[in-house]
Structures are given as C-alpha cells and as structure tokens.
Amino acid sequence: MKLNPHKEELLTMNVFLAFLAILLLVSSILFETVVLNEQFNILPIVATTILISLFPLIKGSVVKKEVYKLIFVAGIATLLGNINSITPWIEVSMYNFYSIMYVLFFYCYLSSINITNKFLQGYIYIINFFLFFYFLLQNVEVIVNNFFFDALYIYVVYITLGIKLIVLFVSLLTFISLVLERLSLTKEQNIEIVNSNFNNEITSEPEISSNQAMEKDIIIAQRISLFFESDTAYLDIGFTLNHLCEALSINNPQIVSRVINKNLDTTFYKLVAKYRINYALTLLQSQENWTLDAISNSCGFKSINTFKKYFMDYVGSSPCVYRTNSI
Image (cartoon, rainbow, N blue to C red; front, side, top):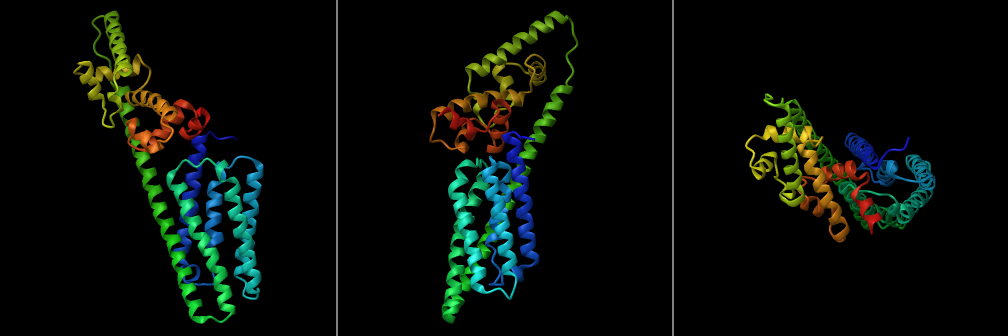
C-alpha cells in the first residue's frame, strides 16, 4: 500500500527512533564490548541504522536493492569481525568493501531521498563525517599494529575510541531532540483538538427569530472572511480568537467561534492555518533562498512540524516538493 508523504515521514521518524533507541540501549548494556573494545567495529551498526530508517522514504526498486545489499554485507562484516580465527586483513577488507559501498550509495542516491526533518538530515551528515574518519583510522590502526609502532598504535586506538563516543553522544542528542519534538507536536495537536471540541459543543443562542439569526451569522461570516482577505494580523504567532473578536468589534468569542464552525464549516485554528498556508505558498515561490524555518516563522506557526502538517493537509505535498515543482 502506497503511503502519502506525510505518513512516510512519520513512519521514517518512528523507525529511526526505534532503531536509535536499540543502538543506544545495546551500547549502554554492552559498553565494554561495543565501545571500549578496540576490535569491535561500530561503523556497520550505525550505518545500517541510518539505512533502515531511510527505507520508508526510498523510491524505486533499484535503490531498495542497494540497501538490501548494504545490510547483507554489513551483517557479514559484523559476523566476521567477531570470529577470532579470521585473519585481520580479511576482516579489514570486508569493512573497507562495506564502507566504499556505503559512501557510493549516499553519493549516488541521497539526492533522490526527500529528507525534510532537520534532525534526521543533520544526523546523517554529521555521523557520516565521523564514520569516514573512523573508517580511515581502522586502516591506520591495522597498518601501525603490523609494523609494531606501539606508541602510535595506542594513540590511534584512543582516537578511535573517542570517535565511537562522539557518534553515540550525537546519537543520544538526536534521539532526545526528536522525542521532544514529537512530544511538542503531539501537545499542539491535542490543544487544537480540545479547542475544536469546545467550539463544537457551544450551543446556539436562544432564537428570537431564526431568519434574523441566520442573517446575522451570514454577516459575521462575511466580515470574518473579509478580515482574513484584507488584514495580515493572523500572521502573528500569538494571534488568537480574542484578537479576531477585537478586530470584528464582537465581545463574545463564542458567537465568532460558532459562526466559523457553522457558516464557514471549519474551526478557528484550521481557518487561520488555511490563510497562513496560502501566504506560505507565495513565499515558497518568491523567496527561493529562505529556509523552511524562516517561512514557517513568517507565517505565524509555532513550529516547523505544525507548518508541515497543515501544508500537507491543504496542499497535498510537503513544502520541499511544492517548492521544487514550482521552480
């Protein structure tokens, strides 16, 4: 079953968080074996975690086959690395083969994978940078060890250990950042749902004349639409229903909320989001150098994830895809 881009991104984040949690948990439990043991190569483990996490975003059978190959080679390399009878040169050659395949994969296919989450994107670039140096040090370590450069060998081992710790520390920071981001987004969504339910539960005023009440609501609805068409106050990040009531000179927020629900067939938050997204469309076309964070803030959204959620709901694609197609 084909998923829409929004669900693909959510699935990617869930898979990434799950595998990152497993990596951190195993590294903590087996700290002495995984981190402090200079013979244990962490490169294929971390690299495979990234590859599996990206799988929901990968399009095309060719790219997916390459991922399968990399995971298979990583498994063999890890297995050989834990067999004591294997010649070190065979082990290193296998790790080198995997590392080259991994680098070529990102060089050839990264541009075709649409990664919109800034934490995941930053994590991949930072970790790949350290994995590259880790790959070089593994080869240097074997060379100096075979030529009996004991003093230099110890330095290389300590540097390799340091890179392992940095990789795990960056993984931990990324994991915490993503969890906090998800909790923040969930909180905002829950607040919107509660406010929406509250607005829907508001009962109408006692009707003196149904026709008069309908005409009054229609006039208010027209004034609301006119406000959003002619005023940009809704772009302020702190814009609320009370601000709208002040602009309309209506003292009762319940009346305005009821009219939005009944006559405009939406909620206050969705109505504001609709006009903010319309404004975002113009920025994406006219401000090509602006980042998504800058556009999100300019449109009044509290977080880029809320911006992406509403953009997907109203436009049907992510901001990055829309910008690419409109250029």
